[in-house]
Length: 188
Image (tube, rainbow, N blue to C red; front, side, top):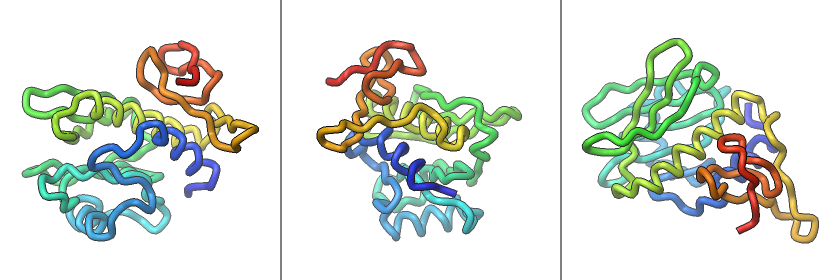
């Protein structure tokens, strides 16, 4: 289940990224897109799963292809493929893959099989790579049960201070070391 603290930490991961094309978080998921995703590739979403992120990889924006990240699983479908899913607890790594035709996000499971989904994002490789980094951090946070690095709030504004690491592009709390490249995360 998704606690308020965990949701806040996930929002902090995505906050510095702004509005990524075709990416919908929590309540931003349009009902029609979510309905199409559930009927096409996420039929097994249970009542015990909270929906976190929907990535719509359709040309017309129907939500029939892409992936859905919940607190328990990643569900996905590419055009002309069958639907598939992986348990969040079984994901060993999330990587960006640059294919000849379109970039993809690869969810590698500990037990062997991988789930690879297109993330065309208007062929903007930097934006796609940024999405992969944020999804990787979110999955690690879900796997840790939210016990990762706490998000720090600015005492003057009460807002969370999160920035993008200048070394690898990951996000994290200002004043901490990036867990990926170990550089200090500083205010922009």
